[in-house]
Image (cartoon, rainbow, N blue to C red; front, side, top):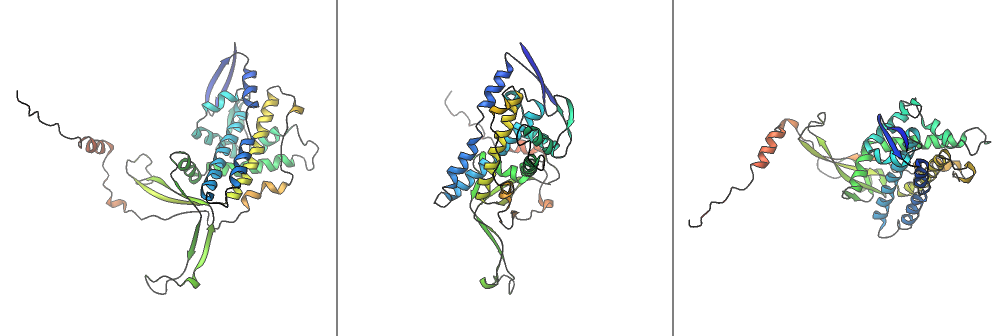
Length: 330
């Protein structure tokens, strides 16, 4: 019987089993990084047809999914490289974001060598330590991957992006399609500005509208009183295609290095990088003008009657229909 002690964030676990290395290798060997390239290729072909809005949202969902997969592997590499298949199921999304936030801030996390400060640069150098060893300048590829992962981390941790992903995957609570924001000065109150004087502030053929729920007041996260906030995110589906390619390369490389740590010969693992180094920057070169925005009615919080949860529950329970009197003859 074998045991392997590891942490997920700050919480310790102990994995028990027989031939844990074999279990780890089976899982890592089956990790299909090309799935994200496949999704990008399939939906790219649909961006010009009648299903274009659906294809764009599918690419966006795959992008969020890909980030989750990538950071799960990097988290497992950081804390439990010999038990990836156990670490990932024990790591919730909220805990994963905490780990990603700590790595971005170079804060110590609990590794196999105790608490250690990690960074995307350090992890990228570790992952690519067996390949491109003679390149100049040294660690050029690792540095590009580190910068890429840092940008991915910023988006993975963005509250609006998190809300968007949840809206897509839980009940598909989004309205897909592009938007244009134009502004002009009214010649008189309530009179629309002439079309010739309108100026386009931002435009994107792709994006989503979705709702989030905010507490009243916003400073009290546990308040039972809430309001809807209508959000808008603009992005380019083409940038998602390019990002998914980079995610696929990243996932392949991290999983490959984990296999090397698990005993696979380094020469048997194929690592990937774009032929053109400029490809690392390509997803962020698409212009969409205003990336996000929200238009909502202003709610006067003084008009909100702050009833307690107990009072709200009593109100609901008090709506139960009264029992009907028994009119049958006795």
